[in-house]
Length: 125
Image (cartoon, rainbow, N blue to C red; front, top):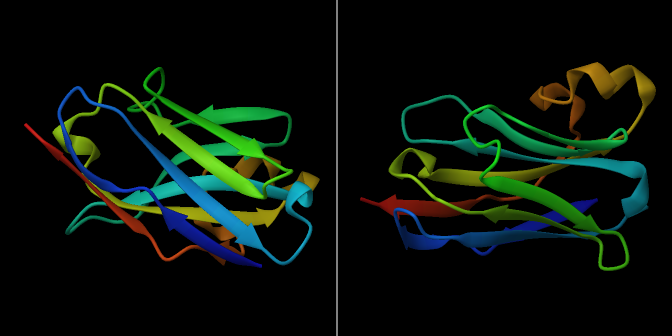
């Protein structure tokens, strides 16, 4: 499975942007999908996941970000609204087989086997 993320850019605070991540290879519908981000000088952190019966978010983006997937296009999206400077980071998409034993660890990078190259989001104040 290969993932390619794109759609990042420079946005003013309060603005919106949509990230996309296209997948090739594998059976897309079998995979749990997630977005992580890594700000400069910080560790990679979980942002959102879509699988195991629903979508899940980290607290700081809940209500502002929406993850969705289009299995027909083998693409996962991250719609981001009300952006804040603290959302500035490199955003990575990830995919992992949606097995039951992984469900409770949806926020952990360890359950995702495949990663995109990252796309930079910069939010200016």
